Amino acid sequence: MTMSGEFLAAIGAITVEFANLETVLETAIWSLLVGISLENQALGRIVTSDLSFRRKLDLFEALLKHRVPKRNNADLKKLRKRLLAVE
Image 1: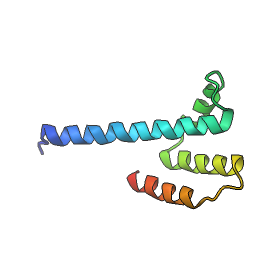
Image 2: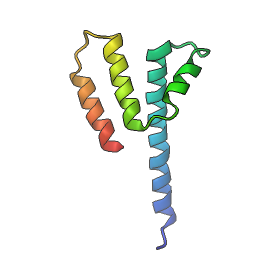
Image 3: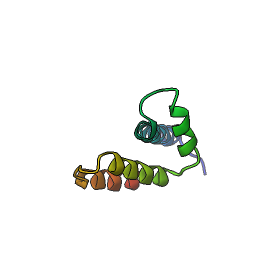
Image 4: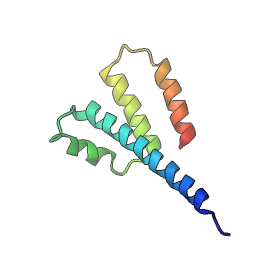
């Protein structure tokens, strides 16, 4: 099966955008774990390095609920649903 350059470019664009999304999620996890200090983010990288996207999302949700226990989680549930749909 031969794939067109346009098709391959679209797959590449999707891959890059998903990687960007995953990086944003990882950065949010690191910030919730250790704050925004660059020196401490190595710990965050260690924690997230071998996690699947779904497990990173689980961790993000748990950390956010821990750090901000009184927040309304309806928007978080909607976000989670949308993120899992793109996985």
